Image (cartoon, rainbow, N blue to C red; front, side, top):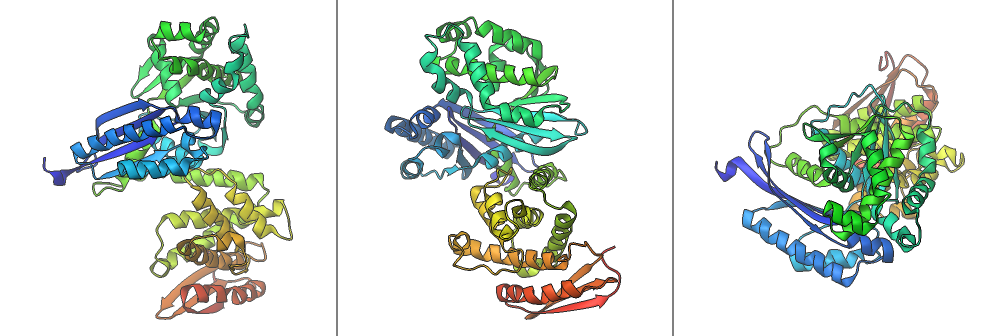
Length: 521
């Protein structure tokens, strides 16, 4: 096989407890083969969660490990890679220094990702596994990471909500370690502590008929390894009966950390987080009446390698749009939470996307911005929940504070700004949210906001009239032909007011034509 027939890529995750790297071979035809997998313990999370900063020794150790990883990458001839870091670095006050030191000492660029981006990569890996979920049923996905717990609820196969709580096993150990030696009922105290932190989450899913509990994360895989003889292997995922989890929890409650480390041949640091990890799983099973726990043997690194495959020359697209559907489903859940009119938002969203698609050769934006526009269109009126008189700005504030799968903080800032200018207001340097954007993002926001503003004008009556919109561009001119059998006096007036913003952004002279005729139906 020649080098033209394959590519070697690397995926690196600086996690809270481990620094992981996978090197995979992407072959012509789309096959992806794991070549090497490495893991090294780190105190990133321990430092960050307890002190708020990463210590000098931990920084040096991270750089040393990554330097070794870089040498291995060079040996294999790896040119493309993705390196990310999660909560251990995300929450450190001195994270910028560590990023800079890694770059200067190893040459590696590490990106600190948001909780939503972290979820995106994990779920991307999940979809590539052999786990075949019945999307007509309800299920919960629990990701137990060192620094936090994330719970996603799917109803009839659609993602309804995701909650992220800073209550991971390492945090629990750090919080309660001072009373471990003086508390004879330490495990029960830990369970009470955990449940006090997740009570609001339990209230959200109370009364839901949940068929399946899927558990993810390195800590869950550690549990499965420790009780290996109790585990059922099914393809590339494992299953554990709820009774066995309960039994294991009871067994651990009679042991201290030293005894756990000795019995299961674990380093002390791993034994310390085993009890809180099992406590979390045990508590979830107390609340969710499911017979067993499903554990796909995946990690965030698998999601990174899949993303690298997607951007390779050997990528062969498939029709699996479940990731996109999950994002939109969760956006609609947020819209419902803030009392958004579904009929109006759906109408505006469809109209905005129609205009966007007809202007592909004009705006020349990447396809991801289509999703940004749709998200902004769905949520553009969510600010009414806070203030009717200043709802556009409140929509911006609500959107940028959300935790939507796949969107970085920068993405949400853009989407919030797009929604802010939906009602005819033109972006201004007087608006701090707009002024703080980099120049490239200002242009993107303005291009998409001008489209959203026109789409919103077409349903300014909130009557969802049967209207079709045809956009034609020739040279320096653009025409918007709006057709309906219904009267469009208000809509035409709003369009005439708002089209100037579009003209300024795109450098086109635009004409609004309102014609009598059959609309979108």
